[in-house]
Image (cartoon, rainbow, N blue to C red; front, side, top):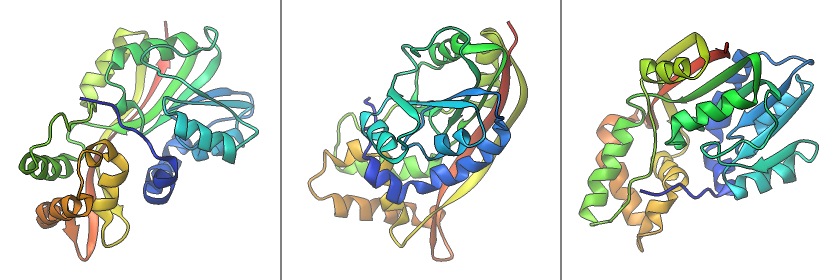
Length: 252
């Protein structure tokens, strides 16, 4: 098992749908001009910037130096920093009115430590608003990658991801001083642009796997061939996303 290594430029060109879908989560957050907000797993910073236009102050953190470098370059007026939320969030206790996260928490395997660290920096009655991969997320995508990877006899090609059920994540939140006030687990078939949409997805979100392969194009073509019956519809590629969206308040 290993962590994903991010290429910010590649992410911006082929993974922009992640940010676009995040607009709905920003709407769920409903930031206002009196609030200080943390964007956890901010990536290249576009949603952080959107939040900053509605909030008093926003900070962005991500564990990827490449993502933070890109965010700092594009949004110079926002404070971005590198942080692993599983270990620590380097802010004083009760700093934030809200913590926001879009499409990042499923990369953090130690979910309870993340929740504890979020709880620490949230003000009492502050809210944690997020969307992440939920139980069953990209099941068919991963099955196709697994099948082809086995034929290549790759070793240690699995990335660490945490795709919890609604009840599983709710229990973790409630155990650690939160009250869940909104929760939704839903299927969201996600369009992957271009004739090689799935190949581009693998290149962006499983780049560590491709680093082990000399003939990357052949591998990606095989993955698309395996996945085609279930993920290619009407001339377009779709990823079988399942999303978990929640709002939880710090109550103790």
